Length: 453
Image 1 (cartoon, rainbow, N blue to C red):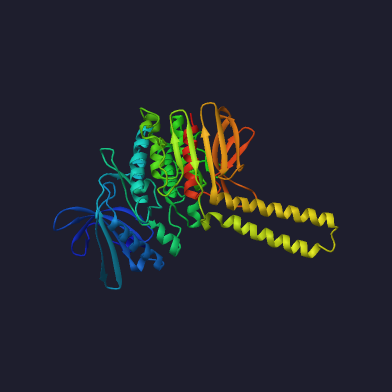
Image 2: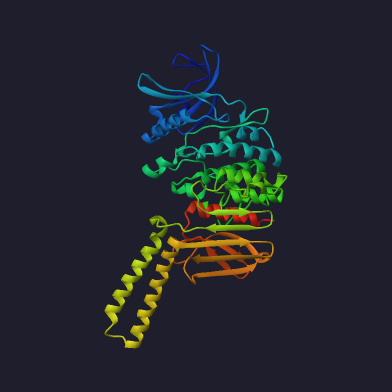
């Protein structure tokens, strides 16, 4: 069916391109290796038949791919050449022409028996992460959404190229216009199945691709524990690299690396000659969000984090304001409805409890506007303190640094408010409630980096 409606080897396309071989086929598109009959240059040509599409979304994705490719400029992404269409009897064709990436796809290499060593896989990870760093750093960020062995080309010199941007989206389009679930099962992050994609979605797919190279089987075939791929029994890896790969494959997006740069820093860190760049005074190995106001100071042995007030930002305070309003309404209704039936003492106690809840929520809002949080960790102890610059409004928690197990993002069972939470064997220390999700994810990643031996 699909083969019959497309081109055969030896055919000419638009009286210019001579079809030499089929590079790939998926959905309603076929990609060919072609030669320009005028210049004898080799290109990759992707063809879409109007008769072959099942719905207009496929044409929309094809046109979006062409638009995105025309804007990219990276040595590991084949150069965009042209986008055009032709009409034949009873059909219309659409084409994207790109430079031809030299080499073979990882999927083809594996089928031919190629086995990548952990060192080669690590080097590939760094090269693809560099591409993702470029894509995610564009305005708006570009998310590939279909990283897998078939879409990574390796040449004879060990250089890698990222191809097939047919599933690509930019963040602006996804936010404003909705999204389509496009990807490959086994390589798709959990949030991808819900039609959502963020830069960390590509990190998950890259991690799954690396795992496929190391195990020679689809990630979908590996066992899972609590939705997470359990790969350690299937392949023997250096513990540091296994931990890094584990982080790439976290099911919850907030538990993954916050960016491609963060993943690069974590991957090269074991081979650094110095653990931190002490001369700069800001030694965290993970890139801080551009708009972050968090003050970070780190030496080889200690860490100080200062979180200033976030100010009146509705997005960060609406949960508290909404909860305060709901509680006030419930309290008023309750007191009015049951005032006559309650003894005065019980009525007074209920009113006091309602007032205390309201005051607590107001304090939370006030702290977001005027409160400072400080975390200090040295070799002996850690201290987490909160302060409002008014007399007496300061409190803190202390503990032994040796007792710290780690840090992660948590939520309470009764609300969706997220906390940065330090863990010891017996206690949890929450902070950073009013930070943006990007700041929270970065802070947890950076502090976790510092705590790792």
